[in-house]
Length: 143
Image 1 (cartoon, rainbow, N blue to C red):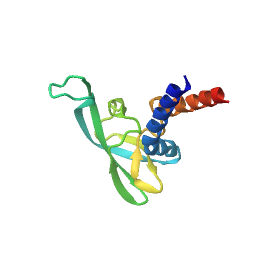
Image 2 (image 1 turned 45 degrees about the vertical axis):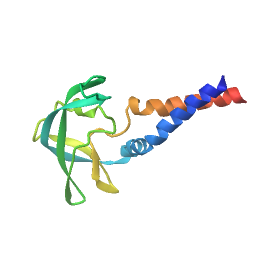
Image 3 (image 1 turned 135 degrees about the vertical axis):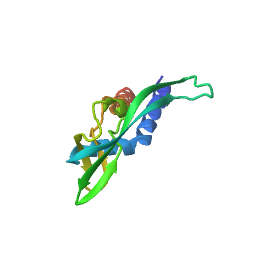
């Protein structure tokens, strides 16, 4: 009984490991510095999610907007398109228009990196939390 659960735990651990850079960036972004930015460009696009066959089956898509914003940090001007460390951020930004002044957060150690929504959402934390709970449960059964 413990062997299949241990395999599930290893798969969850591997998924967390693969996603470690995004999780680390999302967590560290809570300390990033706020700065005002201007929305420079908006693009409406169709975003495909899932497996793509030649005929378009087994995939889903949604209309979304991608934004380019410009901000100043350390006396230099930068541009970014990143909304958050989550994949679904593009369609959450539909309220912005070109020329709008928004708050973004930039990495003080590398001002080229910026996001509009810092931190991690529930989707990003699901696998690591599930891994932790599986770990606690497995070790409690093992002892």
